[in-house]
Image (cartoon, rainbow, N blue to C red; front, side, top):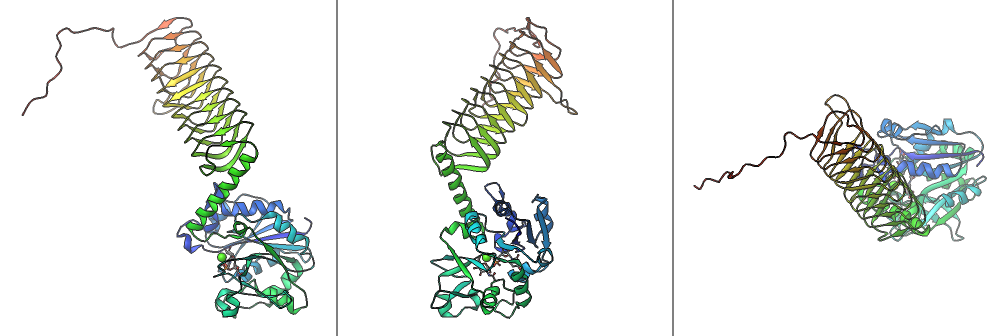
Length: 456
Ligand code: UD1
Ligand code: CA
């Protein structure tokens, strides 16, 4: 929108969070509360976004990227009006300003856009009817229903406290008017604060009617003040994420037991079992099935894959029709081609695995390049680390690695080779041969007795 400025108030301490972390940096769905507000602000396409910060300011800036943000410091939190006053030097004399609260992450963008359509000439205040309005600023109207003022809870008399219509804190107004009104507010009130809400009465005094904009979604006006609030908002946000997935056709075995901390993109006929956590950017192709209790972060899983229970994937690429887990761990840099099988208690790191290859049991494969149609037996370990640096293991196509093999990197196993079980491979293995390397051949000692426990 042309000539739109958005001011986000985020200087409050958030004492009730009982945390070293500034309130607006506490995460909802994996990203700081403030980032949700910023995302909403950006959807309104403003000319500039001004964030008024205070407590823990350096941290807030460090963790909030964005060239489009103007940071304004409020050294002392002397009230919401004082906070907006700090932004005055950055506000032009024309256009519209929208005020948002930095601790209201589920702010309703559509409502804001509607408010903005009417805010070029007058002050628009977002209000909400609350069963228990305690603590909020009350919307005082005259008999004709026109808004006269906002009275803060601590300044309100008994009649005013009975009013259930409250100020959500979100307002939009002509910028020039805002600047003018902000010069006129004072701190002569119960909290000795400069209230932004005093501009309502100032507008009315000037003969400029204030337009109330009543919203009915309680979540969209809920500010986070405590860990309890944080948890409630988190659950609501997750409920919405799950709802959206189901609308897109994703099958969720329990919509209340999925957590999406980032973006989850799903193809058609995806099924997700209970208690899965998705972080960062995750994409699931058509017909992917995710078993229960999986944690999947920044990964790409192609169509037809089955990820079995308790698997943990981070920065992994899984080719189509692969089968992972249960209890598999794919660490960053795991790139699997189509039709691969990674079984239970297998850890893969910084490794590519070719088409149709299998690592089915109890193995560690790190810093390796594994070809196609390879079978890696149970308990195989790539000894990739010599204490100083990481070394590569190369396993070419059609190799068979027997169980309990150690591959001491750097080492190459050439195409079609077979390694006998229990081998410790320290030299390159030639193609199409059987290689075995055991400490000594098997022998048996007849009549050998196990040590006996001594009876006391
Ligand atoms: C404010 C409103 C109240 C409204 C309520 C909605 C005022 C005077 N009151 O009350 O009418 O019902 O929000 O939640 O505006 N902040 C600063 N600097 C300050 C003070 C506050 O940046 O000096 C920020 C806070 O970080 C927060 C927001 O402004 O994001 C609201 O401040 P808060 O102290 O929560 O205001 P309330 O007293 O709850
Ligand atoms: Ca508040």
